[in-house]
Amino acid sequence: MVRIINTYGSLLLTAMGQTLLLALWGLFFACILGMIFGLMSVLKNRVCRVIAQIFVDVIRGVPMIVLAYFIYFGVPYGLNNLLHFSVTLSALQAGTICLALNCGAYMAEIIRAGIQSVDKGQMEAARSLGLPYWRAMQRVILPQAIRTMIPSIINQFIITLKDTSILSVIGFPELVNTAKNVVANTFMSFQTWIIVGVMYLFVITILSRVAKILERRLNRGNAQI
Amino acid sequence: MAMRKSDGNVKIHISHLQKDFGKSKVLKDITLDVYEGEVVVVIGPSGSGKSTMLRCINRLEDITGGEVVVDGIKITDRHVDINKVRERVGMVFQHFNLFGNMNVMRNLTLAPVDLKKASKEEARKKAMQILEKVGMDKKAESYPSQLSGGQKQRVAIARALCMEPDIMLFDEPTSALDPEMVGEVLQVMKQLAADGMTMVIVTHEIGFAREVADRVVFIDGGYIVEEGTPEQVFQHPREARTIDFLNKVL
Image: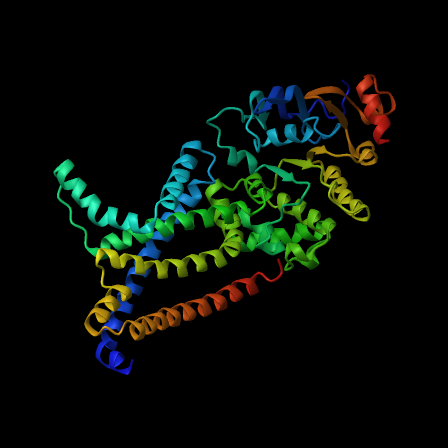
């Protein structure tokens, strides 16, 4: 164990950095996608709602590993052969897209549920005062929705961080992929996977703690409600 | 009809208003004019469409057919900026609908400040005056969840008043209140009526209607069945359905 840490420690730490990098990019775009599709799914407009629903259903219905293969190998191949349009995606780009789509779909559902959990009368009251829809959304609905969303969002962040490991299949040098190489070199799979497990555990525990503090602070601000 | 305010300007003009929810026709043919400074009380059995009619006046419900003109603006016209009309039509809801994420003061100043009708200081000053009027100035920093039902409703009325509306709509404002809190809300509404506000009130408070209403409108089955002064409608109802309803509620 000590030998692995001495020899491969910095390599594994770098890989952890790559994992976090991938997760952050993925989460960043997932938040944007989630917000767009989440808001679309509560609009009056049927077309918007149907588009949002299709997005969520498709992404939820496909395993992420399939999505990863499709985006990394399938899409460039397809564009190249069928449309004679040459594209190459780096593993980081493909991984980010994959995470963003996957996590974005779940975020959209979280955001939709959060908005719908706010009493309809809140929107009506805001509109009755003359506030336009989006203004009412921003001032009245979203601030209340966000409190119910926070625990689910944090949960989704953690799941997404762990899901980066799936992207080892497209050769992105994140933690699992790197660990596989370490195992291949040392044959010490027991020790290596324990180290990797502890590394994930460590990062996610910190994330959970920070989230708990954040959540408590947010709720303290609204303790009266 | 001999109304004491009927010579004034028409503030709300509703003609042949229809409203469907899917297949069910809630409002079939409603025609009603409300004059400036008039207090119109709308009564009727539950499901008769009285709340729906009220919500059509500021287009909280999409209008299926007919015409609604508020303050000279035809709101059934698709191109009308409904937000501008709503700024001048206050609404009070059965369930108060105070913004839970804001204290009382923010509840009152949000719309005036956001819609640039007043600076923050002006809005706060005005809000404080109105809160005093409804007896809630001590609770300016409280959150809605810390208030009783009656207090919430008085704040809700104050919130609507902060936009300086010409018309106030009340959708069963006392129906969700404990009996001992009804009085304080009705008191505020009486004061408002005395100040000359044009009001349309959906309510079950017959005693209040008798005291404050210039006109009582009885709606049933999506039609106005009968209308007149409180005396005409309550003492000498002509229609069988009105008599039937009044027997049940009085």
